[in-house]
Length: 274
Image (cartoon, rainbow, N blue to C red):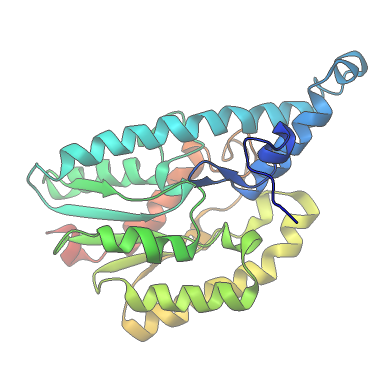
């Protein structure tokens, strides 16, 4: 059967496809996009559904979707300037959390917060090259981000895998994860995944054993190579009030403070003194 092009498909079908141009939508974004077709219509306005919790949540996800392009543009411009500067270089690999999505601005995420602390702690003008992409999977980091690593960065960090929970089978996820950890440079700090206790209600709590298993693979593969792991799972903890963005998926600026503490605790002293 002939497959219709994106231009000829209905708007709702394109919106639910999981893609936004080159960017892969996060699973929560796909679900929220579906919710907008329920909450954003005249009947929903009359019934009050749009003003209810589902409507407010969908509006919050839409707002963050708009931030995706803004944050990506910020880091693209930032990256162009970084490689012409001087000072120790930190390269960031990852997904939307490395972009800072959920914070009021790109520098409010864990990358911006850690950069400020590194500069303060070392009294050196650290630079950060942020190669992350919102919606990235582990295999995207392997294929698209790792090849862009400049020669001899002073520090590399990589936080990835949350999107793979929804887009990859467990066997594919574990295989990709081991391949990635085997391929990163020897001065890489890996981030494990936060446990989803504070999101998605019962579904989040039911996912904890699987996320725990993913984290075990991260720690085992990292230990085999002697790589440190930033234990986001042990730092991003209750109380949850104020720690999530409006989509109830990404951390807020306050939530990213927990992520920043985890990463700062894992960065080797030799690297932070570079």
